Image 1 (cartoon, rainbow, N blue to C red):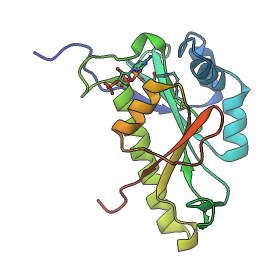
Image 2: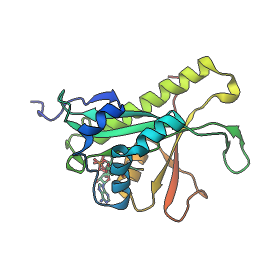
Image 3: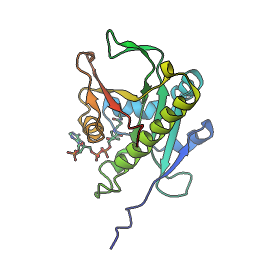
Image 4: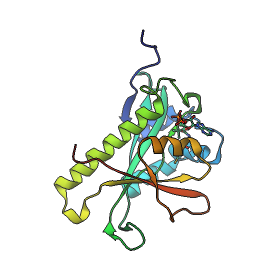
Length: 189
Ligand SMILES: CC(C)(COP(=O)(O)OP(=O)(O)OC[C@H]1O[C@@H](n2cnc3c(N)ncnc32)[C@H](O)[C@@H]1OP(=O)(O)O)[C@@H](O)C(=O)NCCC(=O)NCCS
């Protein structure tokens, strides 16, 4: 019999009006988890939306407003040399921040319904849609097919999650605290 917690999450685009419902969200106590909580609960998310056109989604596990379990986000970079340091000038998609309330880490146990997996699948699907729309709207020099992110080098849970979704380390681009990872979007399927 199906477990009751094995349910699809509800994904909604975030707006400033949602912030009061995020007051109870806590991604955890590690520095990177507190940074995620701070980002979605403060003006940082609003600045990112305003300044970089970032798209942000919140995920609920019921229709109740207060049932937010996590969030994700997607933006485009400015022009970068890709692959660095000498590649052609390109724009890249990137994930400014994502997080799950600490109570739902590893939940539910069934990987087919795991919240972290549902969030990643939704986010990669949105990145694919976005990249495909750019192909329709813009000249080839503006096309994007890479999704990138920075992750704290001690944030093993996030690195494992990203590896599960075919993110690879970009060697040589780590800084003191962070690693850089990229995922090639499947835009042909
Ligand atoms: C990143 C995050 C969304 C992952 O969600 P999650 O529910 O913890 O992920 P999963 O249960 O799928 O676990 C991922 C893997 O990390 C492992 N893991 C979990 N916590 C761990 C820890 N503290 N140390 C080492 N491994 C850990 C899990 O066992 C699992 O391993 P597996 O792939 O071998 O099965 C969640 O941990 C989170 O919100 N963290 C705080 C915010 C954050 O780090 N955001 C990312 C910013 S780049």
